[in-house]
Image (cartoon, rainbow, N blue to C red; front, side, top):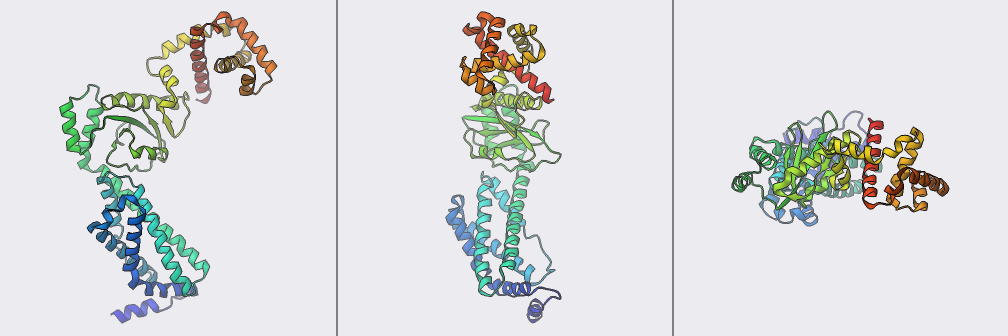
Length: 405
């Protein structure tokens, strides 16, 4: 039986290129060395990826070495014997994704380990192949194949990670999140018990993150167990401990728009979520930039002005403070409005205003004279100047939102 298998692997395949024939024979010779390659991969990861220094030094490292060796052997079998039946060789890597979630880690370290493993495999295989005369063109094809394989492993772990997040066992985490975001603050004892059941360490401070799906089928999000998440409600959201490393991953969530609320004491995280959701709403209305990630800290004035319920107050402020512009025609009104904004921000510095508007300083002086005729002493009164600046910025934001709608 072994002789038959060896004969099949050595027999040339009709139409097969010489490089591919040589590569199949090399793969056959490499198969007995899969264990050594697997050990070098695990040791390399243990030394280079800090998160795995200890775990890979014990029983977990031995189990993973065996899994990597089995994966290498299956990959070599696919080369030496095309059409070899494939079992679910990715299961162990899905399980690794689940284990990362249970350990409270993100997938960053695991993905780094996969990339390093691919590099080690490539160094060893390419050296062996060059020694046996495989051409550079064939090497390039197999380099691409290794990169594709590493991507498959990363995707499998991401699937396992997402599956762990969605397990029914995480129902208690959903209940904890509901307690934190309830209209009436939860009793400390009930909150502590829910956190203990969910195995979530209560932080002193946290922030909320509002999510809005921007595609029909958004990419799954993999966060560590330190993050409480609701992806399936009408208004998806997260609660993240302050300074949690997971915050760094919010910058790249394909298929989602993200708004981060301010860091607050844990008891006030509902208010953080209210502001984050307000930011998403204002972005949809064109009153905030329609960016993938919005930080409420960067848009405090807009949130103060346009938060739900504040519209009548803002309208009254605009009407009362900008009433002098009602006597001006439309085109001139727009020019004076933006000049007034720049004048207030630059504290009357003509050169700075001219640069900001890209006009001649003499044009700025003429417009400021016109503004002085219209607004009189309001331009020098500190309280009026403050209210004018708010009214001008609110009016320009509203005009931009209407034009972009």
